[in-house]
Length: 259
Image (cartoon, rainbow, N blue to C red; front, side, top):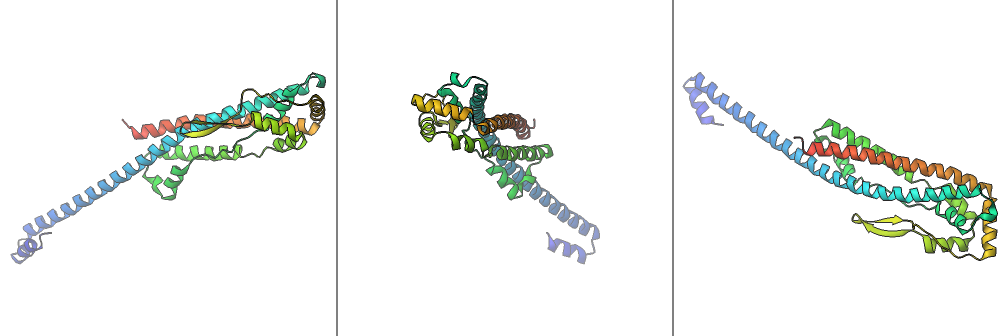
């Protein structure tokens, strides 16, 4: 501010010059504030883009992981259906596959989604930096869907306890040892799969006794029937989450590349 110039003009009573000086000062302050605001908004937009890039990468990784989870539970459900079908067959026609199917249907994995970046975005209040209202709403809907999926996948499986309560422990140990979870590395992480085939050796006398015991156990059969339904719901939840993941990625990419 040119205080000396304004003071001199006031002393000279040159009011026109005073007005011009003040106008220049006001314009300068206004432009300075606009530049500062523009710089701040630009910084916020850059920060929001950084978060969206991280979320985009995390969702992509989650989709790959959920595909592995889907394959896992699809396999356990197929074992369950095979065991249910076996109950409709004569007990004397059943073999060791019946026991394997009963046990493998009870297998589960621990799954928890990665939402670290989104939680940071919300906790710091920076979600407001995401300029697109539709992207913000999409992120909220997506993580609500993820929360629901986490709850669904956290089911503790009553059937798991039931079948393992009644099945002979030596048979269970064999299945776990020879046909348990296989850990593989993919997509920069580790995933769990069940083997396609499972071969165990059981003494004929024990085999017939176990098949007969579990075949006649109505509690195991009823729990299995309900369990297969639960697995179907889990697979549906995974499929629905995959759909909203695709939509969310499209929204994020449109925000990153508005042109």
